[in-house]
Image (cartoon, rainbow, N blue to C red; front, top):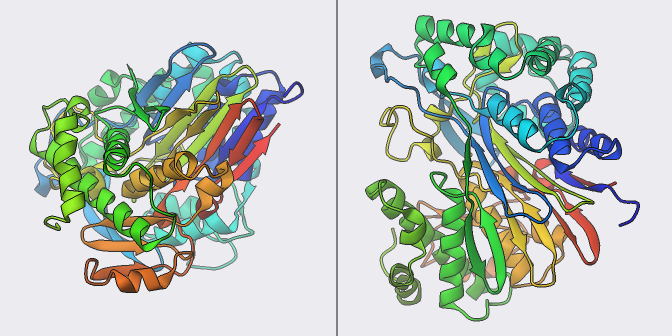
Length: 517
């Protein structure tokens, strides 16, 4: 590793390239992740935005990890639903449809800008102006739309076609009435100017300046909750990660109030208690066991996060006696009962960064003159399982996003995270099982076929033996076998550093790319 600066895995070649160039300039993993994230706003505009939020797991050499929580916050005051502009659209994943709500009334307080500047202040070595240079260049001069990103636009077409501001920026110049297509050049000059201004003036430009005023006016006039006071009081929270052991491997992951990390921990501890040795991967027993573990994890989510939100979910879910209840359900087969992107980086000094971010599907509300679309987190059913408009004011929105670090007994450190809405927890669960139980290589662990069981439906990617699903028809009457790997099943981008050097893997489901530089 003498001549190697680090390893990057992310969802777009240009996102990875920006991080690579920063590492080669002498920047650390945190400089690189900031540069990559600003580039992702340009190259992956549906999946991430300055109008959204995220989390970053950071570990500096020789220290314990810290979780930066800059996810969205609920507004300080709640308007009457009748006064909101809040309406449903259907996202088309090709083989399944999912409903989301958009409009000004779906936007929560964005945390992304403040989060990136807090990370920069704490951990970075290069000026912000240097870190955003390439993102500004790509936004101004344009980036060629690839097949995956064009496909993402197809999924959420109703949002971008019905929004005049979004349609102006993202419309196809070659096919009238369509959104930008593969091979076309996407230019975002307003976004370029905004990023430059942010680098010049800092986070206050977004939270206390002109942008905050514009957001407040839009919501006041068009039926949204956000106010200038909401933006002014937003703060980043640095949290102690949730830590647990799984078969001798140490895992640090996003803690509550985010739910994804602790649910992954619950699933792995339940699996560890149910079987000493996991069944052969892809076998009938494997499919049945994994579906049951996922089912019980979803039930535990309802019990711990909805029925008693004031409880301590870490101690509650990982308590041995509590796990025993679910272990018995799995063994006895008792009652049966969505846009995100990921950047993972390790540098040659041993610094580790995992950043998961999201704009939901986007609210359709463009902040005039900025190139920024606000999030629709208050319109995400996955984030509002208790029902829309039931949220508590001035509170962090819970999330499935679960950036994490796995420390293996041989000294290898694995940095991971995933996009995929409610499928994040099952994508990461299976990734970790592949690494630990099956001792699969990083790339194979990321790209092996996945299952997702929820709300009585068993979804499975191409690659499993179909006869096993036929044999399980009585237990799982609602089955959907996908014809190919799909972004529905998440998008794990992961890197590792250890005795054997660097390794990286990008998830093919989400256009993943990995580079060792």
